[in-house]
Each structure stands twice: as C-alpha cells, then as structure tokens.
Image (cartoon, rainbow, N blue to C red; front, side, top):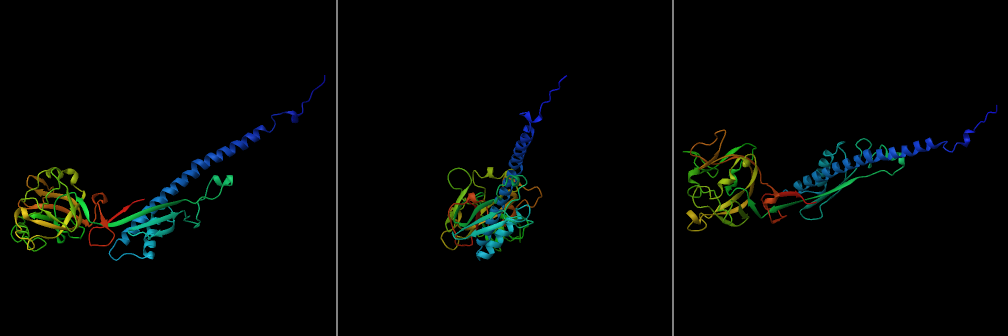
Length: 331
C-alpha cells in the first residue's frame, strides 16, 4: 500500500488565523480607543469648560468691584476656579483677556495633575501610534451696572432697610406699634411718605411688574393697600425665591410741592436682591412662624446683596455707580 503524504505547506489557508487575529486586535484596540479614549477626551473637555466658565465668572466678579482688578489678581481668580473644577485639581489657564471693557475671557487647556504634562495619557490610542491630545475650552463673562430693569415685586425701600448680616429680617410698610422705628428713625406707621406708602405703581394696565430706571422718578400706588393685580404675585412659588426690589435714594418730600397722596414719587437708586421667606398684607399673608404682629405689614426675608437675575435688567454701564452689578456668561 502506498501512503500519500500531503505537504502542510501546500495548504492555502495556512496562517490565515494569525492574520485574522492581528486584524481583530487592531479593531479591538480601535474600538477601545473610541470608547475609552474619546470618552476621556469628552470628559476632559467638559471639565475644562466648567473650569473656564467658573474662572471667567470669578474674574468678572472680582473686576466688577469698585476697586477693580489687576491682571495678576484676575489670573489668580481664574486659576483657582479652573483648577477647582478639574477632577485632578489641575488645568492650564492659558490666558485671561481683559482687553474688552466689562468683559473677561478665560482659555483653559489640559494639564495632568500628576506629571504636569499638557496632554492626555491615552490607554488604547497610543498603541496605534497616534499623537498626544491636548483639549481646550474658552469662556467669556461680562459685567455691567444696570440702569434699567423690571422688579419682581413693585415695592421700594430705603437702602438702610437691608441688613447685610445673612439673617432674615422684617421690612415693614406699616405698623410696628408704639416705639417701633424704621431704619430712618421713624415709626413705620408714620414713614417719610404719609400712610407708609411702599408700593410703586405697576407699569402698564395689567400685571404687577414695575419697569424702573435708575435716576428717574416713579409714582407710588395710591393708598397703603396692595395695587390691583399684585395679589397673584404673592403665592407659594414666591417663598424662597430671590427677587429684585427697587431701592430709592429719596422721595419728592421736601423737593417737590405738594408731595402727598397720589403726587408722591420715589427716585430709584438701585436694586436689592432679597430672598423672600414670608409676608403680611391685607388679605394676603404667609407667615408660618408668626414673625408679624397683627398690626404689621411688610416682607420677611434675607438680604442677599445688590444682585439679581440678569434677565431682569436691560441697559447699563461698565462704570461703577454703586448700583447692583450683574455678572453673566455671554459665551
């Protein structure tokens, strides 16, 4: 019997498995690079954007103060908040641009918190001999001192009513009893405006908002009662909300004559941020902790500074004027 031996080298499929393994390995590495490395890039990009946003807002807040800021102090503020928003507490703040009045632009990029390298370490893509990756982000914040805006509540008070101690206080429009003085040293039932007027006349024929401009006179709502249409503003959604309240510099008392009743006007000076926690007015009261007596009317809450929602304001200047400063991201 003759045995026929077939040479293994004659098999055309010899080595195909090795090629397929090599090809699949490349595919797996590529898939890993897409899933892990690209995911890391997106995560890094999000961190850097948060850092750029926070850095720009921080530098803008610093520069908006009446004392202004230096390039060095703006750099320091941007660096602090950019790093605080990175998981490894490290990022490159490449630039802090103050060249545009009322604006600050912060540019951030990758920084390794361990090696201080300016690029990302790639787990899979490095096996494909791809170049290192540097990720960046950019944010611009602006600040301005508004000269016109819409108040959430059509009430106005003197600057001295707002106590900057972080504690809730009553701001009375009326009442208080014998010996209870307002911030101007008068009994709230005998305020600078006879009758204790604190309400402004709402703008337009409907609604309760007041459009007020700094440096202009605005009339009061006749009488001490809440203006028509304003009752709907005082509901559960107002509790815990920070609103903008016009602050008056002075009234027409002693300036214009006569100045009583419907002729009373307030000169608006700025806006106060006020976190509302309660109120008591005729026919509408929210006072769960009984801070008001039956004879008192007014607001209860915490002064949070001369700031409010930027959407409430239109028009302004970058020159400090003692008014509320509005800081916001614009890009």
